[in-house]
Amino acid sequence: MMGVTQLIAAAIFFGGQLSGVAAANNVNPNCELLASRGGFTTCRSLAENNGISLETLVYLNPSLARASNCDQALNLYAFYCVKERNPDPAVPIQTPEPHTPNMFPNCNTFAPGQHRLSCWDMAGILGVSMAQWDLWNPSMASTNWIECYRGTKPEVYYCVGAKAGAPSPPGSSSTKKPVPSSTTKSRSSTTKRPPRSTKHKL
Image (tube, rainbow, N blue to C red; front, top):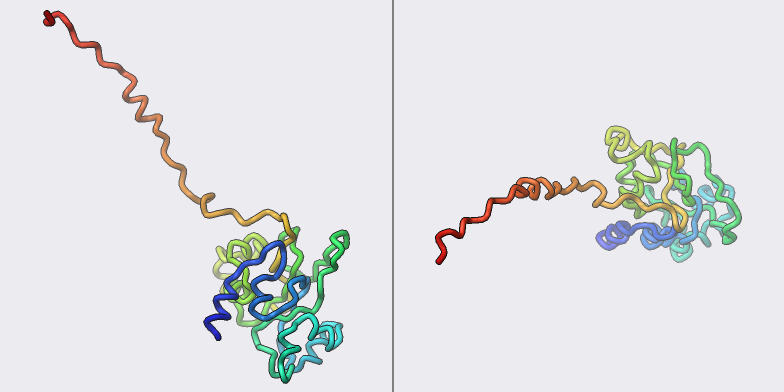
């Protein structure tokens, strides 16, 4: 099962919906705010710490409802939905504080960091590609490998999903070196040779 879970977790977000994490942890696909288990060992304590009822926590995370024991179903490095996105697009998204500096402005899904989780770890667990992570969290980009390796902070929120229609991460083609122009070759051949003499023809 671990192999299947890892493959599912490699999925990316589409239209701001949690396709990767929803498939891996069966989280509500319209989740706006995620929480980590952290030091909470029971479903009730996790719910109370995030200001929701136990019933709401189970509703937002169907995998907990199917478990014979909700508390035993909590995974140490998993993320759980604690707030559903408002279906009315006119309702603004509330960005939690504190959040990572220079966060992507069209973010609509947030998650706190976890001790011992690098940005690569967190992105992998949540099904976010590194191109997306770098675009959404530039201050914690994987290119800054020292900060990324030091780990995400549990008191800081990171962008893990964006609104539909938001700019996509730059493709790999944008980093390609420009192809040398062929005009230099044509310039060297512009000097035409004089026509051969026809005096020797009969």
